[in-house]
Length: 576
Image (cartoon, rainbow, N blue to C red; front, side, top):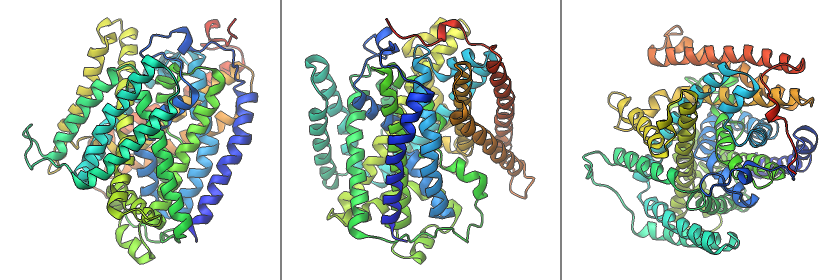
């Protein structure tokens, strides 16, 4: 099949969804009020609570939730065939992610910008909040540790990407300072910053940077990058959002449009056929397509991490409640477009023939381990269709992946700080509410996982990969928990709960089934080598999922009878 058919069909469905379905959700279900006083105005502090233009906020939200996941997940899932991956990315984005991301911004805004963990106590109960906090911290721990190793590996494999990535930081900060002092619009300065970035991408082909085999820290290059990335992310997460987070995210949102333009124009001009099979008949060694497709592709269809960003940073910057539709739902569509592009890049751009593609995707291990690299190669090949030199296009693809992953790390550590502050409030430990202390603990825990859990024979700093098999189910469990809160809140407001209830029920089901199958494998009950650490951690997550199913039923039933935890202070009121 021609890749153009998938591109046109997918983009057309996204356009219809935004014009029709998101409007229905905004007006009939969430009933957005443009006059509602948002937390960004109520608690404006110039650091975390900052009223922000919706286009700038969209840039922050999208690049924070995107990371490497909407690229890596779909690139792995192509191993089963491009058809199931495309169907889940398109319909998951429209009916799952859009509702979830849009809804978590809305419900957090209606609860004074609180995280979904804090919202869960109000909507479900204290037990739910305790569970939420554990799941959230575990998820952020995995995301930050693994994204660090993904970035480090790309730095080592593509040394030309090092200079443009690090040079982007002072450029973005310069834009932030200029706008903060002088005001004005961000569009032109961010476009200038993007042009400068691409000049440095070109320079990266001329002046690549690589560490020696043993660096100044006494570590191998990959491990050194992991340490430096967490030092940087810790500092960045303490800075005011206007100084680095907003301008860099906005620049990266432009970079997304450029990257998607390169990818999709490469498809339209080159008209490649899908060299990957629609359904791959040779998937020996891979987990079952159902339910693991819905776990492997999280970002790009639905992801619990999005709810952490939506309620952790985005809701604190929302200028008007009516902006939530554009920022949340259209942000989900942006990620869906990126995920669709990842499928095209690895399914059509990576290889010219079915045999060549099968040689690269020779096993599930090859697909899982090479996904990011496969995307970069496929992206670069498509870029040559529009006249880009292969070397430049390769570095550009690496910069895209690294930029999004680094932004997610910045936001992830900021979110871990918020979570630790909320825990400090819960257990009456004021020291956890100090920004430096909470950030140090967050970064320290990620480094402890990265270096303390490194498997025998693996490179130092790759410890996050040890528990990464738990990420998919943990992430989707978190999305289901957020949908539980949205469903209960809608029930109490007397509105239609089906748009949130159906995705919630589906996610809880696939999470339970997938985790049960994985636990059997990790205990060695299906013939594989046992992994007791994953088995026991997975069992804890499974119990959490079952527990939340019970909590969800009780909360929804109580909401229907007018009972439950909803206090009068959370009933929406239009600002005077």
